[in-house]
Image 1 (cartoon, rainbow, N blue to C red):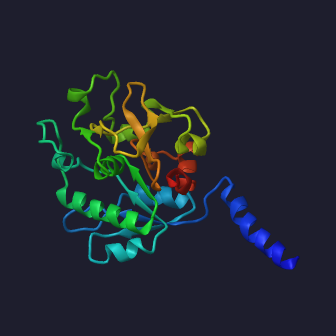
Image 2: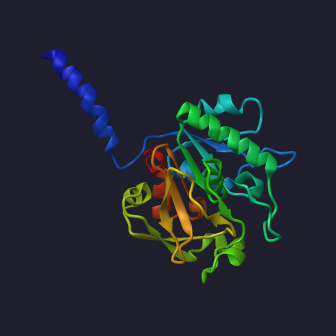
Image 3: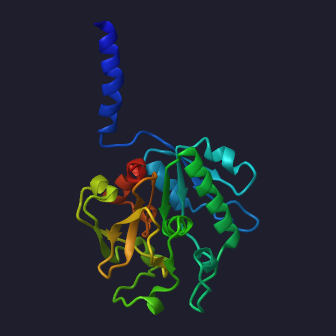
Length: 250
C-alpha cells in the first residue's frame, strides 16, 4: 500500500505543479548583441527577466557559449539590427537596414545547440525574426515598401514605451492561453517582419493589418514576439516574463 502511495505521488505532484499559474524561477541565458569591443545586453531585458522572478545570465560570443547554454533553463534572443537577407535566400533591398552577420552566425549556432539540448528558446523582435529565418522562414525586408499597411510599425525612440497598436491573440496559441486575453496593446519598433512562416511554426499574434506579431513552434519549445514586452512595466507584459517557459513549451 505504501509503495502504491509513493508511486501515485510521484505521478501526481509533477502534474499539479505544472498546472500552476506561474513558472518556477529560471536561469535565463540572454545572447549578447555582439557589438565590437564590448559584451552588451540592454538593461531593460535584464530588468524584465528579474521582474519575472528569474535570474539573467549573459551568454557572450566566445568558445564558452555552448557550455553556458547547457547551464541555463531558457535561451532569450533579443532585439537589434536586420538579419542578412542571404540567410533566407534573398538579395538585400535598398531599404534593408544595417545587418549583423557575426551576430547572425552566433545566434544561429546557439539555436542549433539549443535544439540539440532540448532547451526552450524565446525571441523578442529581431529574436523572433532570427528564429523564423533559422528554421526556414523568410522576412519582409522593409514593411513600408513590401507590404500595404496603414499601421506604423517602426515607432522607436521615446515611443518605444507607448502602446501604438493592438494585436489579436490567436485562439489555441500558447500566448493566448498564458495571457488569457483576446487582444493586447503593444509597443512597436520594427521595419521588418515575418513573411513566410518557418515550417512547423504558427502565428500566435497578428496586428490589425495582418503582420505576424507572435510565433510558436508546434513541436519544439520555441516561441517569440515581434513587440518589446521588456520595455513596458505592465501586468500583461510582466506575466509574459513570469510565465515565459509556458510560452515556449508545446
